[in-house]
Length: 104
Image (cartoon, rainbow, N blue to C red; front, side, top):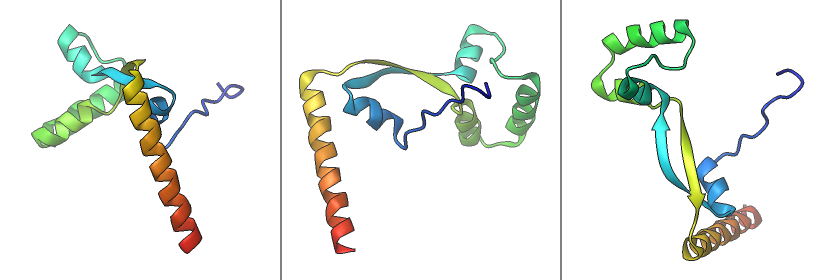
């Protein structure tokens, strides 16, 4: 992958897709899906061992956060009124940023 690095890294993934007319339909996490399917998570063995050991000592809240570390989102086209609201919000944020830049 040296010759084809993954360069897509927006600051706000969901905002990026909302601006181009998409909204999240479903979010799934690899570790939670692995439990549901009763299969090992698709991580290297060493990562699975380390996270299992860390999970023994972690609080329930931290264990849930660990399970939500990596996953995927299924997007669907946003309705016209949702796209308009996103575009309006983006325009307001841009105006606020411009005003901040001008005043210091």
